[in-house]
Length: 406
Image 1 (tube, helix red, strand yellow):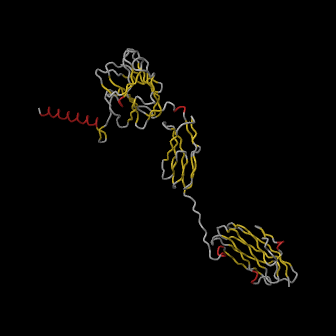
Image 2 (cartoon, helix red, strand yellow):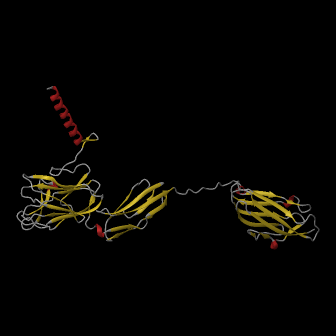
Image 3 (cartoon, rainbow, N blue to C red):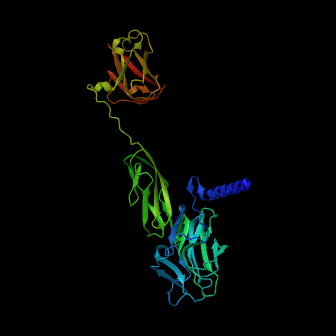
């Protein structure tokens, strides 16, 4: 006897375990309704559309008292107090409703009546997928009469067709789809939108306009930004860069899911570096001084001033030589000035200034330089050559013919 009760107890525990598995999932009640159950609201993961939704069309839209379809408002037992059905007693075989939706699952919500159709076909993407009945032994409203949840998450066409010819009611109360799915606007296939640019690169504080081109042309557009802290957009498509980062600007045809996007990349704005204003204007230059080699021609007054703009790291090496060791009055010879940039920085706007030693006269018209040109201010007492920029390791050679005088 004890073993008998023990077996009963074990079986009872097993039944409880199976029931728990059926209704519990991850510690919460799993809401998985079945066909024939009443669903007054869409379950988690589903979204409901009323029979009056503009994206659902019917084979006819006719009056209640004389034709096949009518729309009954303020029906308190139906979802949103509306239902679309047909007049009882009229043959409505092959009457239908149809719509397009984007998603992977679908439910049809209708009432169970004793006087409703026993046979309704469901076509999805032009293929007969299933059949359901709206006929019940007793009246029950907002019943899930059909369900399919094995579709690819994509756009699908649906046609629900009455196959009964007895004059029974054929009703549509609501349609449920994936929560992240939606009914497709019947006009969407003839609509499109594109933007003038698919990407923008803007500095902080800069604005630029995006132009949307739509088909048809006269449609309302909703503009939005994925991150208004980075970039904003107004109702005319004017994009303004706010701060460094990236945001997606979306232009969407109002009332549809037709959209076009533009990726906006915002970088920091350029901040101009104001040069320090020296108290002494000469301080904005770096001056190198070199001396010529030789005897009579290379006294202290033979120094060469090398003036260039730039950072102190840009170093110039200057060598001045003469092609003779000694000269006499009336002789001619040539000074050679060689300037080399020994750093890895560019020496900018280099100017060479050379003053003639005693008893020496320069001949400006015969000065030759490998870079730049002789300044018009040059005289027989001083030579000025505007060399320009000298790149790293760059070299410039200037030859200055002279005459020895008393």
